[in-house]
Image (cartoon, rainbow, N blue to C red; front, side):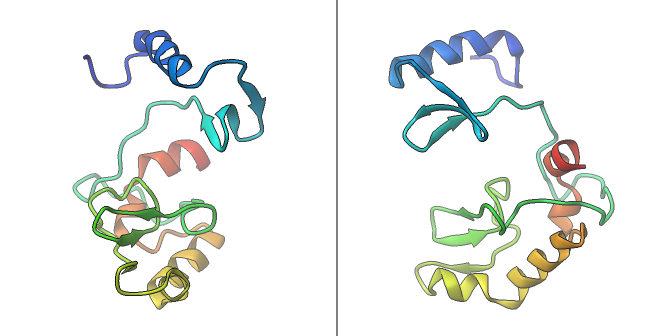
Length: 135
């Protein structure tokens, strides 16, 4: 299968989704609801955050830790699903309660920063998704 966000694959992907989530689908604020609490959202291609990417500066807004977070397979809590390498570990669900992790100093600094449109973390300053979507 070809990779890299090729638009010509969209029809094939939609047919495969319809096989798992039969229509009718419903257009809602969060996207197209294809199942109970399952949404499809079309988006533009973006540069995946990577610590080796160029720094885009601290002026970034993001919904990380406000509307979303990520939990890696080892229990590590990160601010968003794009931190797939665990570059911003906030705690571990096998060792702490989520409330404790989210009230920790690093998590709170990230939240306060994004409220002001400032990325506190290096990975966030290198996130093409936040810049293309919210910038």
